[in-house]
Image 1 (cartoon, rainbow, N blue to C red):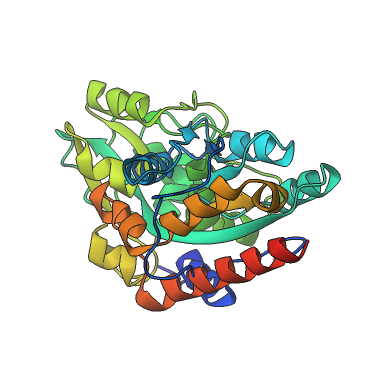
Image 2: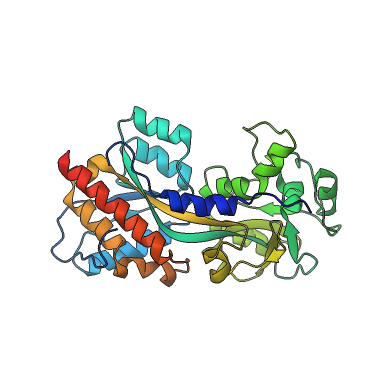
Length: 336
């Protein structure tokens, strides 16, 4: 199989560049506390993948005397819509903000600080009883769900659309995120886009449109459990807790690799990705509780929530980079 430049390396480069950007204006120390924290309301929306982290950090913050934030997870894209309209203080995201979302925020007068807070991956799944597929190449994934795969009704039919492995002649029932999900966007970017570009597919192409995208990971897992030859994908942490499904290894050009905390952290799993929170700079300047909460989020106590809810912690270097970005953002807000 032809070796391609893996987007997983783009993810590593993003971290070094600071996955960690400050828009408009603009770590925290190793300890952050909610005790004596300022009063106020904190609204968080966005990625359903990041939601469990923010929920747990919020609980710990409240237990230490801080404000209990409201947290919802309609999806990364929907979260940015609210965030760029000034309706939320923090936007959880399972991908970096898109150019068009940046433009919407700019039009809405919203500047922000991007903070990388954890590592995750996309896990490709099938029903637990389906032992006919052990590993899929990027070409296989493209053949199954790429923009040219509309109408493919069996796994084996994907061969005509670019799949390179011997796939079973079994019904292909897809249960996967919808377009509002950051997991949908990340899967396309990591697994599909390079092949689509090589094949001359228009840049605005998406994953095959003829499956019903699901907004909730629980619905995806339920669907996968219901059909023996099912196929789909969810975030790594969610997949690790699921029953009745089986993880499929992925070959991004260097051999089959199973998703694990180790392969996600070291970047050898081809579908690894960073997770972010975006903080509204204007609200940071106006709401002391927001600053206190993000201080706590990036503290050792707050970061302990990442592995507690099943995600992969940042390396020490990446966490330090995030904390440095946050310190600079606070300094910028104090001057405004």
